[in-house]
Length: 225
Image 1 (cartoon, one colour):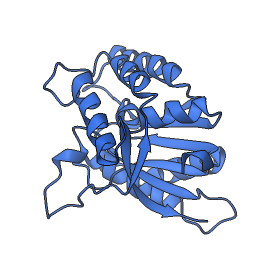
Image 2: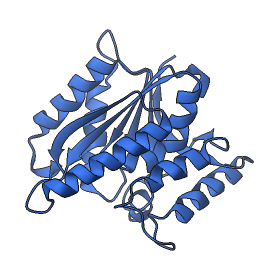
Image 3: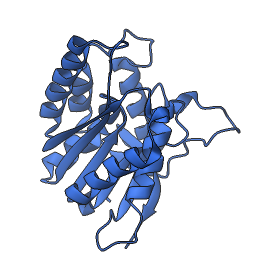
């Protein structure tokens, strides 16, 4: 599959979601010459987040994306942990306009069963934007796994992350881990989930599932041939 991706857009509800879920694949795509763009949908707003905190996280994202070879990062600036208070039309329009502008052949989206409501709403807006109804739309949509969000769903009550696509990242795992480490404000000491060790362990586990040294796992939502 990866050799069929020429233009990828990764939707990240918050800074670092894109690295946690798609960091190894993004680096591999960039190495293969594909154009990879990231959209960070939300931004911390006062009084919960200071301007200094927001600037620091954006700088961390810039350093992480430089390591991964990201061609462009879009900051949509919508309220973090507040998308449920935003009119749905506004979120749909922001993501829809972006998809039209970037024209990705592949769209990476958060998994709808994630415990964070922002993740769920970004997924829903992405599905609206990616409808195969117009002249241009993503040919494939892949839902990614966000450690500390995807694994905290309620078994049998919310959608379970059951991956059906595994992409080898053995050659880019260290790049992914270095990119995550660039988010110094987000990294925690093991055994916290948001630790370099936990992220490495998940990649090894997903890889072992398909007899690879490391992999990232996805749910294929749709592919149009």
